[in-house]
Image 1 (tube, rainbow, N blue to C red):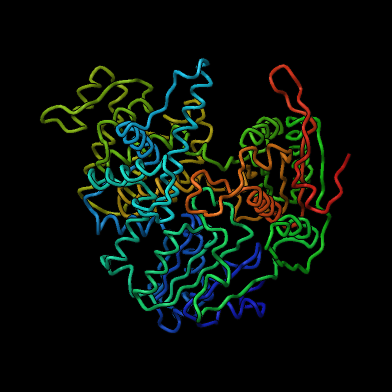
Image 2: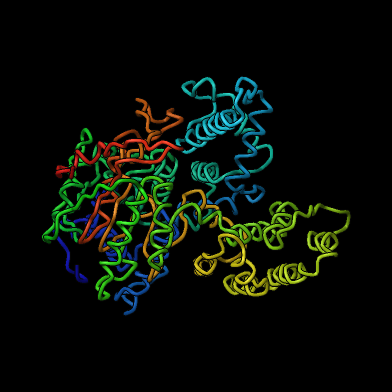
Length: 624
């Protein structure tokens, strides 16, 4: 699609004026272009616009594209009229200004605190009824995951603590949890979002987040009730319009509290406008047909997408086992690269299960094919962990605890660093580390970083200087898993440009963890990840592997409850698995290859596998 060449649907979405506008933007229909052009039209008329995005990466892309837009470069549009933010960054700034006495906890900190609260009120896991230790540990994790999911989902659905419909086994904990947050002046990411809504309802939200003539919500199908109500109230307080853009067919986050049915005409006010974008500019007809067949098997779903481009049929391949799948895909990648016809970053390998995707690592490495694994393992890398701990220290959050953790990550030594009378965290650490000369560089770097905070200046410079002073690249790349160190540091250096200080950068890291925004794709590297990680991206060729029953769809799916608000172990059901396959297939522009296995090893036994039931919905003929 060339600049300023729009379909009638897009023109309507760009120009329509209504109090509420719902734009159902199907995969590959130019959603981002429509958002930008709508914002440009309004800003050109002197309107003040807020654009909210799902991910930090999406925010960065929008900022770059708007800054390079012809109307901005020519001076026809004042860039200052357009504010681009994630829900998390809005919530953080509200927390910082309205509730400055509160401390934002990480996921792990909040999880530990929740267990502490549960045990305090008598909700405990009983281990002695399980004779097998491994079984007991498994049941323990399931038990605490259940109560954690329950509290999180009730929070993001804006359920009040005295609601009589809350499940009886959760109600006391939910009440005690929110009382603890207030008493101890702490919150996690979900509670922070809810506190932002409370601030708006109490009319105590900072002026910066009021007075918008239009609020544009991107990826609206992934909104929780709290996120939706927040934007609705922000628009209402400003007497502005609310435009939501998204696609119910790509709603794959209901387990996190998202509302798959939000973008429907029935949810709009009387003066609303509903517009559907159906012209797909990304994929061929042959790719869209099976993807639509899968998603339209969902009751009530009538997704329409039209392409003017033809290409090869979606191909299917059944292999003997997952390792053979990975080898087959790696060999196909080599074929695609022959003659430099397709850049590496135009190839994606997707799977529902990380255990399946793990098989691709050795297969790609065997052929010297560089790849980036886009997933939550990003947050487990040693260099990421140390940056997270350092951000806690420099933000004043658990500094002694995180100093102990930082020393362990940097030196590989378990040295307890606790508070001592009259000693700062740096002096206490120096005293505890006096016998370790190798700690000198780390401590000097942290002390200088603390001094730079007092002096001020650009945060990106502070961040980069600390990484260099610590010698972090050389120190971390020698550790297990350090082969990704350069990728991680590049990613976080780029991220630091968008933050003003260590506390806001720390909040950005926690937002990434909470929403699973791991490693960004990299030029010259094959993308490997789940459909969650691939969402919003496109590739020349996409492989979807592990399409076996009990793998994709997930073996853990359950049917949705009638009332989504109280479904405290929500998985999205079988329908969400269909939407996930739809997302995976529609990442492909020209080629899509679906693979699965006949067998897998389960200990000493080879277990027979069945092809995924989702494959039979595609309308494609399965190979024998």
